[in-house]
Length: 231
Image 1 (tube, one colour):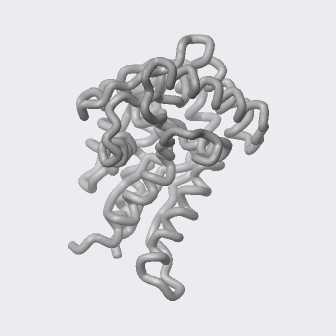
Image 2: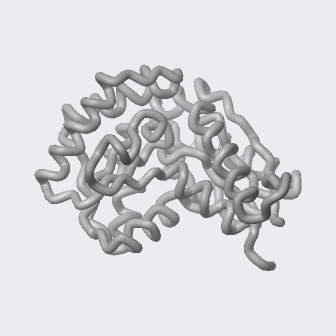
Image 3: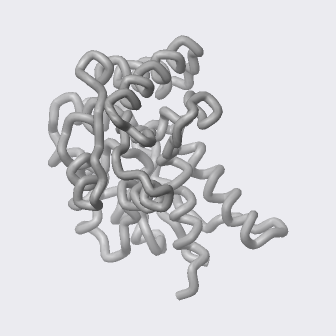
């Protein structure tokens, strides 16, 4: 079994799900008392958020690259950045190590294409919805991403940082997300990317009657597949 390196704490609320999903996946495959071989570097999210707000992506890249190098030195065979937003610096982090970085966008695209969907709504932080790094990568894979309008983008973002990253799950916020998803459906969305690893803490497939792509689960499943693949 290969060892997975997790750059987490971005926020720790969703990192806990990564750890659970990866261990569950390994156990389901191998049985018994088997669990995953993994190392976690948990960042101080407050430091990262300050860099996000300042738009200081070079310093953010340096911070995560340092985490990746430490995981590689610890014996990891691949790296996951346990968040969508910080894939804005995925290239820099990947270049800092010799082991592969499993990109959350690429693993999600595989699942979307498997369902035959091309036009997909994207929910996430303001950075994920407004910066080009995420939507451009989706387009490179032949998808047609749709993001909410400015008012809805602000609301999605605010719920993530003021509630979900603090472990607060409000039914009223879930209802707002559902309304925003309905507006994206009206614009042609055939499915929705939950492009923030905190959103699946609040919003589940049972709440919406169109395909939801839980990036936390998808990314974790990709890590399991990598860990258990033959050398």
